[in-house]
Image (cartoon, rainbow, N blue to C red):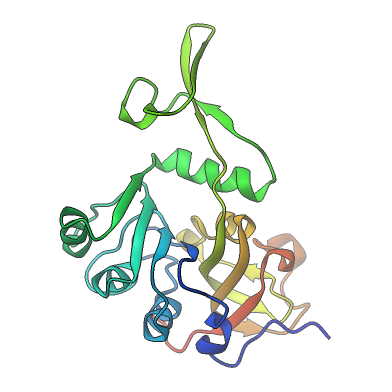
Length: 223
């Protein structure tokens, strides 16, 4: 019987190794798997590449990993949200690299990887520093930049409900980047607010299919 539910965060995260690339779902504080990130911090993985919408805020989540010098590079679209001093200090001191990607381009790069597609053209960033070192072209008088699909070794996401098979539903805006990252990562680990019986999620409401999920752990709080 298929059962992707793990007994602890440590069991789910034990596959993550030094130097891994990790997609982290969320937008602002919505949909971020804070508990998984906290457990990852405790387990000591280092030299990580983090792919997310932002580079962390306050002193938890991605910011906590950066503060502990576990992150080598951040790929994101919004590196300076409010209360992002930890990332700013690390970047200025050269302790962390940054690849800044326009938000729509970031989402499409992740989607392309998950869908098995190749590079794509976008007008976003044409004629700016975003296009430096990339192939560009002009089609019907409009400039485009060639962007590459973006995949990762792992994805850490937060779902509202999950079943033992790995089917997921998200709550409101917490959906954000999470479904795309589940598809684009080679191994997806999910923090779920609630685990339900297989078959209890209406098929038409499932937002991420079990095919894209490797492990599910129950959240220990409702933050």
